[in-house]
Image (cartoon, rainbow, N blue to C red; front, side):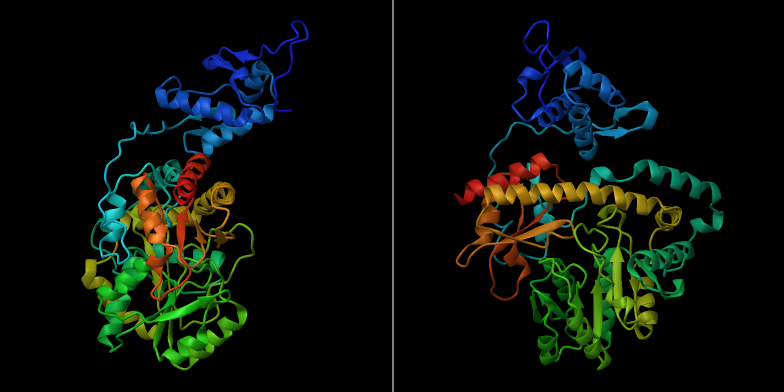
Length: 486
Protein backbone atom coordinates (compact mmCIF):
# COMPACT_ATOMS: atom_id res chain seq x y z
CA UNK A 1 0.00 0.00 0.00
CA UNK A 2 1.16 3.52 -0.73
CA UNK A 3 -0.73 5.25 2.06
CA UNK A 4 0.54 5.90 5.54
CA UNK A 5 -0.71 3.52 8.23
CA UNK A 6 -2.99 4.73 11.07
CA UNK A 7 -1.52 4.90 14.55
CA UNK A 8 -3.53 2.33 16.54
CA UNK A 9 -3.17 4.36 19.71
CA UNK A 10 -4.37 7.63 18.27
CA UNK A 11 -6.67 6.50 15.49
CA UNK A 12 -5.21 9.14 13.16
CA UNK A 13 -2.26 9.31 10.78
CA UNK A 14 0.79 10.69 12.55
CA UNK A 15 3.48 9.44 10.16
CA UNK A 16 6.34 11.86 9.73
CA UNK A 17 10.08 12.19 9.93
CA UNK A 18 12.53 14.58 11.49
CA UNK A 19 14.45 14.27 8.21
CA UNK A 20 13.46 17.39 6.26
CA UNK A 21 10.37 17.58 8.50
CA UNK A 22 8.53 15.34 6.08
CA UNK A 23 4.82 14.89 6.73
CA UNK A 24 2.99 12.44 4.47
CA UNK A 25 -0.32 14.17 5.17
CA UNK A 26 0.81 16.71 2.58
CA UNK A 27 1.03 14.04 -0.12
CA UNK A 28 -1.80 13.69 -2.65
CA UNK A 29 -3.72 10.38 -2.66
CA UNK A 30 -1.91 7.74 -4.68
CA UNK A 31 1.07 10.00 -5.28
CA UNK A 32 3.43 9.35 -2.40
CA UNK A 33 6.47 8.52 -4.55
CA UNK A 34 5.95 11.64 -6.68
CA UNK A 35 5.53 13.78 -3.59
CA UNK A 36 8.58 12.38 -1.82
CA UNK A 37 10.77 12.72 -4.92
CA UNK A 38 9.65 16.34 -5.23
CA UNK A 39 10.46 17.05 -1.60
CA UNK A 40 13.93 15.54 -1.94
CA UNK A 41 14.60 17.38 -5.19
CA UNK A 42 13.60 20.69 -3.64
CA UNK A 43 15.84 20.03 -0.64
CA UNK A 44 18.81 19.36 -2.90
CA UNK A 45 18.08 22.50 -4.91
CA UNK A 46 17.86 24.83 -1.92
CA UNK A 47 20.87 23.36 -0.10
CA UNK A 48 19.16 21.54 2.76
CA UNK A 49 20.60 18.37 1.21
CA UNK A 50 24.11 19.40 0.13
CA UNK A 51 26.21 17.65 -2.50
CA UNK A 52 27.93 14.79 -0.71
CA UNK A 53 25.10 14.41 1.80
CA UNK A 54 23.67 10.96 2.38
CA UNK A 55 19.98 10.12 2.31
CA UNK A 56 18.53 7.96 5.08
CA UNK A 57 18.42 4.21 4.51
CA UNK A 58 15.22 3.46 2.60
CA UNK A 59 13.92 1.09 5.28
CA UNK A 60 14.51 3.69 8.01
CA UNK A 61 12.73 6.50 6.17
CA UNK A 62 9.89 4.17 5.16
CA UNK A 63 9.41 3.18 8.81
CA UNK A 64 9.36 6.80 9.95
CA UNK A 65 6.87 7.80 7.27
CA UNK A 66 4.88 4.57 7.72
CA UNK A 67 4.87 3.83 4.03
CA UNK A 68 6.07 0.86 2.06
CA UNK A 69 9.79 0.70 1.40
CA UNK A 70 8.99 0.64 -2.32
CA UNK A 71 7.72 4.22 -2.13
CA UNK A 72 11.05 5.42 -0.77
CA UNK A 73 13.18 3.37 -3.17
CA UNK A 74 11.10 4.67 -6.09
CA UNK A 75 11.64 8.28 -4.96
CA UNK A 76 15.37 7.68 -4.54
CA UNK A 77 15.53 6.08 -7.99
CA UNK A 78 13.96 9.18 -9.53
CA UNK A 79 16.68 11.35 -8.03
CA UNK A 80 19.26 8.93 -9.41
CA UNK A 81 17.58 9.02 -12.84
CA UNK A 82 17.69 12.82 -12.74
CA UNK A 83 21.44 12.72 -12.05
CA UNK A 84 21.05 14.33 -8.62
CA UNK A 85 21.95 11.27 -6.55
CA UNK A 86 23.91 8.05 -6.90
CA UNK A 87 23.79 4.68 -5.18
CA UNK A 88 27.10 3.98 -3.43
CA UNK A 89 26.55 0.45 -2.16
CA UNK A 90 27.07 0.25 1.59
CA UNK A 91 27.56 4.00 1.72
CA UNK A 92 23.91 4.39 0.73
CA UNK A 93 22.40 6.94 -1.62
CA UNK A 94 24.45 10.13 -1.87
CA UNK A 95 23.62 13.53 -3.37
CA UNK A 96 26.01 14.14 -6.28
CA UNK A 97 24.60 17.20 -8.06
CA UNK A 98 22.15 19.99 -7.38
CA UNK A 99 19.55 20.87 -9.99
CA UNK A 100 19.87 24.26 -11.58
CA UNK A 101 16.90 26.29 -10.46
CA UNK A 102 15.27 28.14 -13.29
CA UNK A 103 14.86 31.86 -12.64
CA UNK A 104 11.33 33.22 -12.50
CA UNK A 105 9.93 33.05 -16.02
CA UNK A 106 10.45 36.22 -17.98
CA UNK A 107 8.62 36.40 -21.26
CA UNK A 108 11.18 37.47 -23.85
CA UNK A 109 10.28 37.75 -27.51
CA UNK A 110 11.89 34.96 -29.49
CA UNK A 111 13.39 36.17 -32.77
CA UNK A 112 11.09 35.18 -35.59
CA UNK A 113 14.03 33.89 -37.61
CA UNK A 114 14.82 31.02 -35.19
CA UNK A 115 11.93 28.72 -36.18
CA UNK A 116 11.04 29.37 -39.82
CA UNK A 117 9.74 27.35 -42.72
CA UNK A 118 13.08 27.76 -44.54
CA UNK A 119 15.80 27.23 -41.91
CA UNK A 120 19.24 28.64 -42.67
CA UNK A 121 22.60 26.91 -42.40
CA UNK A 122 23.06 28.20 -38.84
CA UNK A 123 19.59 27.29 -37.59
CA UNK A 124 20.77 24.64 -35.13
CA UNK A 125 23.31 27.06 -33.64
CA UNK A 126 20.57 29.65 -33.22
CA UNK A 127 18.18 27.17 -31.61
CA UNK A 128 20.86 25.95 -29.20
CA UNK A 129 21.69 29.54 -28.23
CA UNK A 130 18.04 30.43 -27.55
CA UNK A 131 17.21 29.97 -23.85
CA UNK A 132 14.39 27.56 -23.04
CA UNK A 133 12.85 26.13 -19.91
CA UNK A 134 12.42 22.63 -21.33
CA UNK A 135 14.63 21.43 -24.17
CA UNK A 136 13.09 18.53 -26.10
CA UNK A 137 15.57 18.79 -28.96
CA UNK A 138 16.03 15.36 -30.61
CA UNK A 139 19.36 13.57 -30.69
CA UNK A 140 20.68 14.64 -27.28
CA UNK A 141 21.48 11.89 -24.74
CA UNK A 142 21.19 12.30 -20.98
CA UNK A 143 24.30 14.41 -20.41
CA UNK A 144 23.94 14.15 -16.62
CA UNK A 145 24.65 10.42 -17.03
CA UNK A 146 28.12 10.94 -18.50
CA UNK A 147 30.35 8.41 -16.65
CA UNK A 148 32.68 10.96 -15.06
CA UNK A 149 34.16 8.59 -12.50
CA UNK A 150 34.84 5.88 -15.09
CA UNK A 151 36.30 8.46 -17.49
CA UNK A 152 38.64 9.82 -14.79
CA UNK A 153 39.79 6.32 -13.84
CA UNK A 154 40.48 5.50 -17.47
CA UNK A 155 42.25 8.82 -18.04
CA UNK A 156 44.51 8.29 -15.03
CA UNK A 157 45.33 4.77 -16.19
CA UNK A 158 46.10 6.00 -19.71
CA UNK A 159 48.33 8.82 -18.44
CA UNK A 160 50.21 6.41 -16.17
CA UNK A 161 51.04 4.20 -19.17
CA UNK A 162 51.44 6.84 -21.87
CA UNK A 163 54.80 7.07 -23.58
CA UNK A 164 56.16 10.57 -24.33
CA UNK A 165 55.89 9.85 -28.05
CA UNK A 166 52.09 9.73 -27.74
CA UNK A 167 52.06 13.47 -27.07
CA UNK A 168 53.31 14.17 -30.58
CA UNK A 169 51.38 14.19 -33.84
CA UNK A 170 49.54 10.93 -34.34
CA UNK A 171 48.32 8.87 -37.24
CA UNK A 172 45.62 10.83 -39.15
CA UNK A 173 43.61 7.61 -39.29
CA UNK A 174 43.41 7.59 -35.49
CA UNK A 175 45.35 6.05 -32.61
CA UNK A 176 45.98 2.33 -33.23
CA UNK A 177 44.48 1.43 -29.82
CA UNK A 178 41.31 3.35 -30.69
CA UNK A 179 40.94 1.73 -34.10
CA UNK A 180 41.41 -1.70 -32.52
CA UNK A 181 38.81 -0.94 -29.84
CA UNK A 182 36.33 0.33 -32.46
CA UNK A 183 36.80 -2.78 -34.60
CA UNK A 184 36.03 -4.98 -31.58
CA UNK A 185 33.11 -2.78 -30.52
CA UNK A 186 31.55 -2.98 -33.98
CA UNK A 187 32.01 -6.75 -34.05
CA UNK A 188 30.32 -7.15 -30.65
CA UNK A 189 27.53 -4.62 -30.99
CA UNK A 190 26.82 -4.36 -34.73
CA UNK A 191 28.01 -7.64 -36.22
CA UNK A 192 30.58 -5.85 -38.42
CA UNK A 193 33.91 -7.57 -39.02
CA UNK A 194 36.56 -5.00 -39.85
CA UNK A 195 40.32 -4.84 -39.60
CA UNK A 196 41.56 -1.89 -37.48
CA UNK A 197 43.48 -0.66 -40.51
CA UNK A 198 40.20 -0.08 -42.34
CA UNK A 199 38.88 2.37 -39.74
CA UNK A 200 39.33 6.16 -39.78
CA UNK A 201 38.66 8.03 -36.55
CA UNK A 202 36.81 11.30 -37.24
CA UNK A 203 35.25 14.15 -35.28
CA UNK A 204 31.76 12.69 -35.35
CA UNK A 205 29.46 11.69 -38.19
CA UNK A 206 29.30 15.33 -39.27
CA UNK A 207 32.99 15.40 -40.17
CA UNK A 208 32.69 11.98 -41.76
CA UNK A 209 30.01 13.31 -44.13
CA UNK A 210 32.06 16.41 -44.87
CA UNK A 211 35.17 14.37 -45.76
CA UNK A 212 33.11 11.97 -47.84
CA UNK A 213 31.42 14.82 -49.68
CA UNK A 214 34.81 16.34 -50.49
CA UNK A 215 36.14 13.05 -51.88
CA UNK A 216 33.04 12.33 -53.94
CA UNK A 217 33.09 15.80 -55.46
CA UNK A 218 36.70 15.23 -56.49
CA UNK A 219 35.53 12.06 -58.24
CA UNK A 220 32.82 13.83 -60.20
CA UNK A 221 29.86 12.85 -58.01
CA UNK A 222 27.62 15.89 -57.59
CA UNK A 223 24.70 14.44 -55.64
CA UNK A 224 23.87 11.99 -52.86
CA UNK A 225 20.29 10.78 -52.60
CA UNK A 226 18.81 11.07 -49.10
CA UNK A 227 15.77 9.79 -47.26
CA UNK A 228 12.63 11.91 -47.24
CA UNK A 229 11.88 12.69 -44.51
CA UNK A 230 15.52 12.67 -43.43
CA UNK A 231 17.98 14.63 -41.34
CA UNK A 232 18.14 18.34 -42.14
CA UNK A 233 21.57 18.51 -40.48
CA UNK A 234 23.00 15.79 -42.74
CA UNK A 235 21.64 17.57 -45.81
CA UNK A 236 23.27 20.80 -44.70
CA UNK A 237 26.70 19.15 -44.46
CA UNK A 238 26.32 17.67 -47.94
CA UNK A 239 25.13 20.98 -49.37
CA UNK A 240 28.16 22.71 -47.85
CA UNK A 241 30.30 20.45 -50.03
CA UNK A 242 28.33 21.38 -53.14
CA UNK A 243 26.35 18.13 -53.32
CA UNK A 244 22.70 18.04 -54.28
CA UNK A 245 20.43 15.82 -52.16
CA UNK A 246 17.60 14.37 -54.26
CA UNK A 247 14.86 13.04 -51.92
CA UNK A 248 13.83 9.38 -51.87
CA UNK A 249 10.56 8.44 -50.19
CA UNK A 250 10.57 6.63 -46.85
CA UNK A 251 7.53 4.49 -46.02
CA UNK A 252 6.79 1.89 -43.35
CA UNK A 253 9.52 -0.41 -44.74
CA UNK A 254 12.15 2.31 -45.02
CA UNK A 255 13.72 3.83 -48.11
CA UNK A 256 12.00 3.06 -51.45
CA UNK A 257 14.85 1.38 -53.35
CA UNK A 258 12.80 1.28 -56.56
CA UNK A 259 12.55 5.07 -56.38
CA UNK A 260 16.29 5.30 -55.66
CA UNK A 261 17.05 3.22 -58.75
CA UNK A 262 14.75 5.35 -60.89
CA UNK A 263 16.42 8.55 -59.65
CA UNK A 264 19.71 7.68 -61.32
CA UNK A 265 21.67 8.69 -58.20
CA UNK A 266 25.09 7.05 -57.80
CA UNK A 267 25.18 7.32 -53.98
CA UNK A 268 22.65 7.31 -51.13
CA UNK A 269 22.80 8.25 -47.45
CA UNK A 270 20.43 6.34 -45.20
CA UNK A 271 19.74 5.38 -41.58
CA UNK A 272 18.54 1.77 -41.95
CA UNK A 273 18.56 0.57 -38.31
CA UNK A 274 16.44 3.43 -36.94
CA UNK A 275 15.44 5.85 -39.65
CA UNK A 276 15.64 9.51 -38.72
CA UNK A 277 13.15 10.91 -37.99
CA UNK A 278 10.39 8.30 -38.49
CA UNK A 279 12.07 5.45 -36.59
CA UNK A 280 11.20 2.75 -39.15
CA UNK A 281 13.59 -0.12 -39.90
CA UNK A 282 14.70 -0.92 -43.45
CA UNK A 283 12.81 -4.11 -44.25
CA UNK A 284 14.40 -7.38 -45.35
CA UNK A 285 13.30 -7.22 -48.97
CA UNK A 286 14.35 -3.58 -49.18
CA UNK A 287 17.79 -4.51 -47.83
CA UNK A 288 18.18 -7.19 -50.47
CA UNK A 289 17.09 -4.75 -53.17
CA UNK A 290 19.53 -2.16 -51.80
CA UNK A 291 22.36 -4.66 -52.01
CA UNK A 292 21.42 -5.40 -55.61
CA UNK A 293 21.47 -1.66 -56.34
CA UNK A 294 24.92 -1.39 -54.71
CA UNK A 295 26.08 -4.36 -56.79
CA UNK A 296 25.14 -2.36 -59.89
CA UNK A 297 27.67 0.32 -58.89
CA UNK A 298 25.82 2.42 -56.29
CA UNK A 299 27.47 3.64 -53.08
CA UNK A 300 25.57 3.13 -49.82
CA UNK A 301 26.51 5.49 -46.96
CA UNK A 302 25.14 4.05 -43.70
CA UNK A 303 24.69 6.43 -40.77
CA UNK A 304 24.32 4.17 -37.71
CA UNK A 305 23.65 7.12 -35.43
CA UNK A 306 21.79 5.57 -32.48
CA UNK A 307 21.38 1.84 -33.14
CA UNK A 308 22.49 0.93 -29.59
CA UNK A 309 19.40 2.49 -28.02
CA UNK A 310 16.60 -0.04 -28.43
CA UNK A 311 13.80 -0.97 -26.05
CA UNK A 312 11.03 -3.10 -27.55
CA UNK A 313 12.62 -4.92 -30.44
CA UNK A 314 15.45 -7.27 -31.34
CA UNK A 315 18.76 -5.85 -32.60
CA UNK A 316 18.78 -4.75 -36.23
CA UNK A 317 21.98 -5.70 -38.08
CA UNK A 318 23.99 -3.02 -39.83
CA UNK A 319 23.87 -3.13 -43.62
CA UNK A 320 27.69 -3.01 -43.53
CA UNK A 321 27.67 -6.39 -41.75
CA UNK A 322 26.20 -7.90 -44.93
CA UNK A 323 27.80 -5.71 -47.59
CA UNK A 324 31.50 -4.76 -47.25
CA UNK A 325 31.19 -2.10 -49.98
CA UNK A 326 29.06 0.09 -47.68
CA UNK A 327 30.63 3.29 -46.31
CA UNK A 328 29.70 2.97 -42.62
CA UNK A 329 29.81 5.79 -40.06
CA UNK A 330 29.02 6.04 -36.36
CA UNK A 331 30.02 7.88 -33.20
CA UNK A 332 29.69 8.06 -29.41
CA UNK A 333 27.65 11.29 -29.55
CA UNK A 334 24.38 9.54 -28.68
CA UNK A 335 25.96 7.11 -26.22
CA UNK A 336 28.26 9.39 -24.20
CA UNK A 337 28.22 13.04 -25.29
CA UNK A 338 28.39 15.06 -28.52
CA UNK A 339 31.11 17.24 -26.95
CA UNK A 340 33.65 14.41 -27.25
CA UNK A 341 33.58 14.77 -31.05
CA UNK A 342 34.68 11.19 -31.66
CA UNK A 343 33.31 8.98 -34.40
CA UNK A 344 34.51 6.62 -37.08
CA UNK A 345 34.35 5.93 -40.78
CA UNK A 346 34.59 2.45 -42.22
CA UNK A 347 34.86 3.16 -45.95
CA UNK A 348 35.00 0.67 -48.82
CA UNK A 349 38.55 -0.02 -50.07
CA UNK A 350 38.22 2.22 -53.10
CA UNK A 351 37.60 5.35 -51.00
CA UNK A 352 39.93 4.69 -48.05
CA UNK A 353 43.16 6.37 -49.17
CA UNK A 354 41.40 9.49 -50.43
CA UNK A 355 39.47 9.80 -47.16
CA UNK A 356 42.66 9.40 -45.13
CA UNK A 357 44.24 12.19 -47.17
CA UNK A 358 41.17 14.40 -46.65
CA UNK A 359 41.36 13.78 -42.90
CA UNK A 360 45.09 14.49 -42.81
CA UNK A 361 44.69 17.88 -44.46
CA UNK A 362 41.57 18.72 -42.44
CA UNK A 363 43.16 18.52 -38.98
CA UNK A 364 46.07 16.00 -38.86
CA UNK A 365 43.84 13.64 -36.88
CA UNK A 366 41.72 13.67 -33.73
CA UNK A 367 43.14 14.46 -30.28
CA UNK A 368 44.95 11.31 -29.15
CA UNK A 369 44.31 11.42 -25.39
CA UNK A 370 40.52 11.32 -25.74
CA UNK A 371 40.85 8.42 -28.19
CA UNK A 372 42.97 6.40 -25.76
CA UNK A 373 40.61 7.03 -22.85
CA UNK A 374 37.60 6.05 -24.94
CA UNK A 375 39.44 2.95 -26.19
CA UNK A 376 40.04 1.91 -22.60
CA UNK A 377 36.34 2.33 -21.75
CA UNK A 378 35.48 0.14 -24.73
CA UNK A 379 38.01 -2.55 -23.90
CA UNK A 380 37.24 -2.76 -20.16
CA UNK A 381 33.48 -3.12 -20.63
CA UNK A 382 32.69 0.30 -19.12
CA UNK A 383 30.97 1.42 -22.32
CA UNK A 384 28.65 -1.61 -22.27
CA UNK A 385 27.83 -0.90 -18.62
CA UNK A 386 27.08 2.70 -19.50
CA UNK A 387 24.80 1.58 -22.32
CA UNK A 388 22.85 -0.76 -20.04
CA UNK A 389 22.45 2.00 -17.48
CA UNK A 390 21.22 4.72 -19.83
CA UNK A 391 19.04 2.32 -21.82
CA UNK A 392 16.91 1.64 -18.75
CA UNK A 393 16.68 5.35 -17.97
CA UNK A 394 15.85 6.29 -21.57
CA UNK A 395 13.12 3.63 -21.68
CA UNK A 396 11.41 5.20 -18.65
CA UNK A 397 11.60 8.63 -20.22
CA UNK A 398 10.33 7.29 -23.54
CA UNK A 399 7.36 5.83 -21.68
CA UNK A 400 6.79 9.18 -19.94
CA UNK A 401 6.69 10.99 -23.28
CA UNK A 402 4.22 8.51 -24.75
CA UNK A 403 1.97 8.97 -21.71
CA UNK A 404 2.26 12.74 -22.03
CA UNK A 405 1.42 12.69 -25.75
CA UNK A 406 -1.57 10.42 -25.10
CA UNK A 407 -2.86 12.79 -22.41
CA UNK A 408 -2.10 16.17 -24.00
CA UNK A 409 -2.04 15.47 -27.75
CA UNK A 410 -4.62 12.69 -28.23
CA UNK A 411 -4.99 13.38 -31.96
CA UNK A 412 -1.28 12.84 -32.63
CA UNK A 413 0.16 9.61 -34.01
CA UNK A 414 3.42 8.40 -32.44
CA UNK A 415 6.24 7.00 -34.60
CA UNK A 416 9.57 5.37 -33.79
CA UNK A 417 8.96 4.47 -30.15
CA UNK A 418 10.77 1.12 -30.19
CA UNK A 419 14.28 2.60 -30.25
CA UNK A 420 16.34 5.77 -30.30
CA UNK A 421 16.32 8.98 -28.28
CA UNK A 422 13.35 10.75 -29.85
CA UNK A 423 9.74 10.33 -30.91
CA UNK A 424 8.10 11.72 -34.01
CA UNK A 425 4.43 12.63 -33.84
CA UNK A 426 2.27 13.49 -36.83
CA UNK A 427 -1.01 15.34 -37.20
CA UNK A 428 -3.65 15.58 -39.88
CA UNK A 429 -3.17 17.59 -43.06
CA UNK A 430 -3.53 21.34 -43.02
CA UNK A 431 -1.58 21.75 -39.78
CA UNK A 432 1.33 24.21 -39.48
CA UNK A 433 4.06 22.42 -37.52
CA UNK A 434 6.48 25.35 -37.92
CA UNK A 435 3.99 27.70 -36.27
CA UNK A 436 3.49 25.26 -33.38
CA UNK A 437 7.24 24.80 -32.84
CA UNK A 438 7.76 28.58 -32.92
CA UNK A 439 4.93 29.15 -30.43
CA UNK A 440 6.36 26.44 -28.18
CA UNK A 441 9.78 28.11 -28.23
CA UNK A 442 8.15 31.38 -27.23
CA UNK A 443 6.74 29.46 -24.24
CA UNK A 444 10.18 28.06 -23.37
CA UNK A 445 9.86 24.60 -24.95
CA UNK A 446 12.18 23.46 -27.75
CA UNK A 447 10.96 20.95 -30.35
CA UNK A 448 11.65 20.60 -34.07
CA UNK A 449 8.98 20.77 -36.78
CA UNK A 450 8.90 17.62 -38.87
CA UNK A 451 8.69 19.75 -42.02
CA UNK A 452 12.31 20.83 -41.40
CA UNK A 453 13.32 17.28 -42.24
CA UNK A 454 11.21 17.05 -45.41
CA UNK A 455 12.08 18.18 -48.91
CA UNK A 456 8.65 17.37 -50.29
CA UNK A 457 5.18 17.94 -48.80
CA UNK A 458 4.03 15.40 -46.24
CA UNK A 459 2.15 14.99 -43.00
CA UNK A 460 3.03 17.74 -40.52
CA UNK A 461 4.36 16.85 -37.10
CA UNK A 462 7.02 17.35 -34.45
CA UNK A 463 10.29 15.61 -33.59
CA UNK A 464 10.88 15.52 -29.84
CA UNK A 465 13.78 14.19 -27.80
CA UNK A 466 13.18 12.61 -24.40
CA UNK A 467 16.55 11.24 -23.28
CA UNK A 468 17.90 14.44 -21.70
CA UNK A 469 14.80 15.42 -19.71
CA UNK A 470 13.12 14.08 -16.59
CA UNK A 471 9.63 12.59 -16.67
CA UNK A 472 8.23 15.72 -15.02
CA UNK A 473 9.88 18.03 -17.55
CA UNK A 474 8.63 15.89 -20.42
CA UNK A 475 5.07 16.03 -19.11
CA UNK A 476 5.31 19.81 -18.65
CA UNK A 477 6.76 20.37 -22.13
CA UNK A 478 4.21 18.21 -23.92
CA UNK A 479 1.50 19.83 -21.81
CA UNK A 480 2.54 23.22 -23.20
CA UNK A 481 2.16 21.83 -26.73
CA UNK A 482 -1.30 20.54 -25.89
CA UNK A 483 -2.33 23.89 -24.45
CA UNK A 484 -1.07 25.73 -27.52
CA UNK A 485 -3.08 23.42 -29.77
CA UNK A 486 -6.21 23.93 -27.74
